[in-house]
Length: 302
Image (tube, rainbow, N blue to C red; front, top):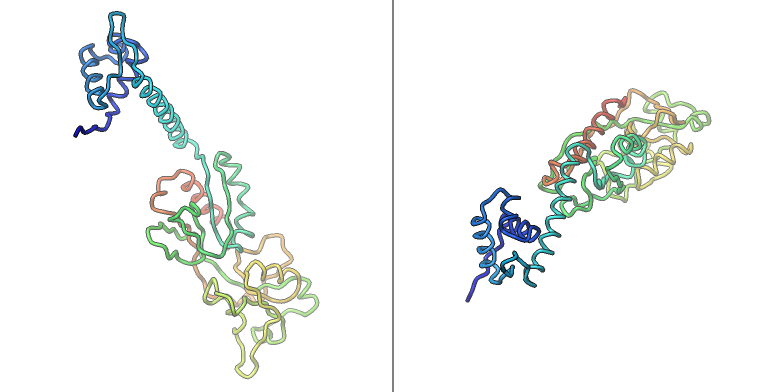
């Protein structure tokens, strides 16, 4: 039984030159190889594919039917390689291509979308898409290229970089405070409306409802005015004037009707992480996006 050996790329390059030149002599001049070296390489290629690729005659070479088939494929492959090479060269100077980012609804809807315009204007050839979800998408299965997470990732083989320390503080709207007054002490919260994360839902952070029990008396348990199983929902309810809520500092824009109250109170801190797969380590668009986020965090007050 005959065995077909894999084709050598160097021989295919020589085959392409011979087919274009129409003779061993002209191809040799183009490749700076002797006519005999060219002839040996073509003969070896024909042996490997077990079929003649050229009709040889006194006026030069003519491709056989099999040779024409191979030439079409070689041209297509060389064209694709040239395009890839150009794109890789371009990416060294200018990041380009798709970048799918996943993060939590709260972080994405407030802080990230407020500064993403600057990144897009800096790198217009990077095609950004945001997937906002409180579920952990599988980066290994390429459900996203990069994630910004409020807890350490549970998937293996992911690179994680601490992005920021998340501070939780107490806020109320100006309208609520005008109606209900400012609490002066933590004990005053007993007489105020509190908005918390839903107790029946999985908590994105274990200590998310710390405010409900801060300074609470055992003989007078607090009852929230509203439970919401979405942090951004808490933010919107608080802005509407419904009540007081503990929220991450990054959620509060500079121009807002929300007021930081009880400044001596701060909830348990936790870290946010910039996460991406190991195989994307050398991605230029991920590198510039990471560096952009680190700069924006450094420029922020939180």
